[in-house]
Length: 72
View 1 (cartoon, rainbow, N blue to C red):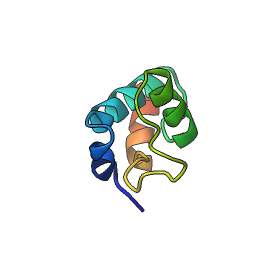
View 2 (view 1 turned 120 degrees about the vertical axis):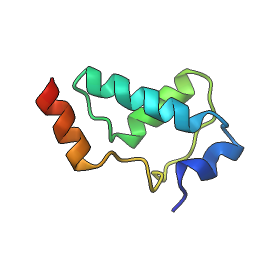
View 3 (view 1 turned 180 degrees about the vertical axis):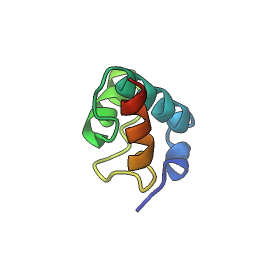
């Protein structure tokens, strides 16, 4: 399974795009672990499609998600 940094050859900004997208999703109380939605976002901004297989390091840790919900 590939990691986000492995995908930087096709999209040099994918790690930054991932961080920003997850922050926005959390801020909107949306699922920040939805690979399909992230792919759709990348395609909408004109970035390369990273493919159907979710990156190994894509998902937020559950403890981080819980902290976000508690502070909301």
